[in-house]
Amino acid sequence: VADVAPPLESGPLAATGPVASPALVTQLKDELRDAHAMQIVDRALAEFGEDVAISFSGAEDVLLVEYAKESGRPFRVFSLDTGRLHPETYRFFAEVEKHYGIHIEYLFPDAPAVEALVRTKGMFSFYEDGHGECCSIRKVAPLRRRLSDLRAWITGQRRDQSPGTRSTLSHVELDAAFEGTNGALVKFNPLATTSSDDVWAAIRAFDVPYNALHDRGFVSIGCEPCTRQNRPGEHERAARWWWEEATKKECGLHVADDG
Ligand code: ADX
Ligand code: SF4
Image (cartoon, rainbow, N blue to C red):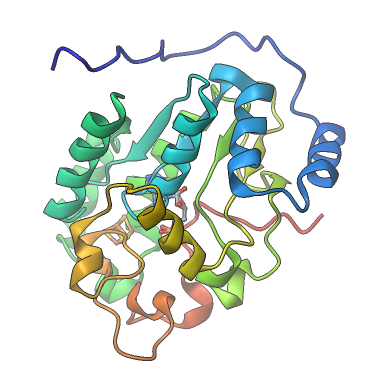
C-alpha cells in the first residue's frame, strides 16, 4: 500500500537517552500520578523515542495507538502473534495498520518450541495442564526478545481489568519480570486508572477502529481457544482461561511491581 509509512528500524537499538533506572521510574511515577492517559503516552514517547513501543493486543488498547497519533510524535507498535488469535483480530490488526499508516511489528514464537509442544501434547494441552507452558512459548518468550532491545514499553493494562492482580497498578513502574537494553525496563500503563466505560467513551469520541468481536459479546480478548464471550453480569476476566482458578489468570506478560 503506497501510503503506508516504512517501519522504524528494528533490531538492536543504541541506547541514546537516560538509563531506565529506578530513580527515573520514581520521578516519572510522581510526575504522572494524576496525568491523563494521553499525557502519559506523550511523555513516554518524548522520554524514550524509538526505545519505547506500544504493546498492542488487538483489543480496546487500540486507544493507546490513537493517543500516540494525537501526540504527533513518531511511535512504534508491536503485537505478539501467538498463531492462535481470532480471525477477527488478524483483520483488525490490518485495519489498524491502514487507518494509522503504520506497520505493526509482529513477534512470532520460536517454531521448534511450538512444534515440540504440539507434537507431544497436541493443540489444546492448556485445557489439560494449564495455560502456563503454551503462554510461555507463544507469548512470554517472544515478548522477552522484543523487550531486550527497548528501554521502555507501553501497555493497555487497567486496574479494573482484574481486581485480583491489577488493582494497585501504577501509571509507571519498573518492570518486575523483563529486562531492557540497559537492564532496567520502564513500563508505562497509561490506562491504569481509566475505567472500561471511559475507554469505550474515548474510542467512540475519537472514532477509533475496534475489533469486531466486541460487538459480539467479547470484552477481554486474547487467544481464540482461551477466550469466550462474557455472560451477563460476570467480570470481563472470567471469560479468559475460564477453566482455571481466578488467581491464575495472568499469562506471564505482566508481573506487578510492588515497589
Ligand atoms: S494478558 O496478559 O491477560 O494476555 P491482557 O489481554 O489483559 O493481557 O492485555 C493487557 C495488555 O497486555 C494489553 O493492553 C497489551 O498491552 C498487552 N498484551 C496482551 N496481549 C498482547 C499481545 N498478543 N501482543 C501484544 N501485547 C499484548
Ligand atoms: Fe496458548 Fe491460550 Fe496462552 Fe494463547 S492464551 S498462548 S493459546 S495458552
